[in-house]
Image 1 (cartoon, rainbow, N blue to C red):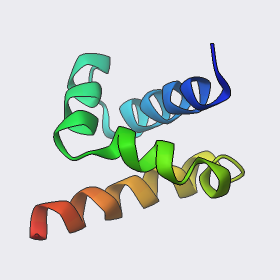
Image 2 (image 1 turned 120 degrees about the vertical axis):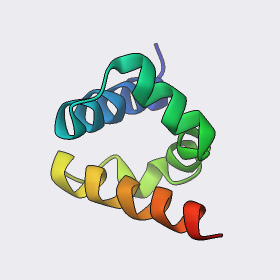
Image 3 (image 1 turned 90 degrees about the vertical axis):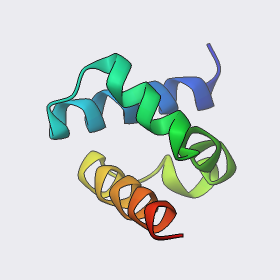
Length: 68
């Protein structure tokens, strides 16, 4: 498994736990708002951040997509 795939899996798990979602619901949400592409595009910067920061950043990203 690639480093970026491991990172995406980590983000899914952390987001799922923080928001009390199922894995299926989290993956659906990530694809609905393009989070997977975002994580891929900014992997170089994001992979060095902590779990709490990543969840907050994903929340902000989804919020921005909802407002657009």
